[in-house]
Length: 184
Image 1 (cartoon, helix red, strand yellow):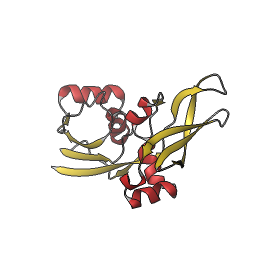
Image 2 (image 1 turned 90 degrees about the vertical axis):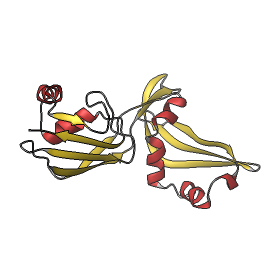
Image 3 (image 1 turned 30 degrees about the vertical axis):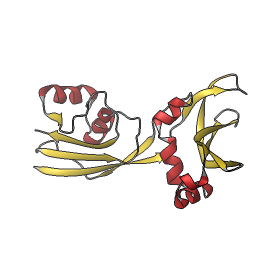
Image 4 (image 1 turned 120 degrees about the vertical axis):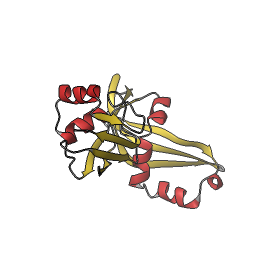
């Protein structure tokens, strides 16, 4: 059996939908990739800045509120102050944090790197995503394997495409490590 490795890389932070006070309705907001830090006495507030796609109104997503500077490792605090792109992307893809703050996260723009899989031989695909993407596993597999929706669903129903890591191949979203076995 051949093993193929794929890695999902997030290209851009997902848009998130929330109420815009200026526009007067629910609008998509884009992550700016920048942090705002405010010091109140001996406590810090750290926010990730989002902008409305229609009017550029800003929204600050709370990342840390009223935290002691000593509670954060010095390296992490430095990453916040230097607007570390990777850290901003990590928070922008945190769906629980976004939902907790009243917004609806969208799906990320993702590129899948790795070699092609051959459907004519038994293959194990190891798909890794370091960040949650919000994209269905089925969409990625169909695209990479060049399958129509009906062909993909037929192969799953017949047992030709099986998930060995326990994920739902129809409705599951790409997050973490996924192992898929393809049988000819």
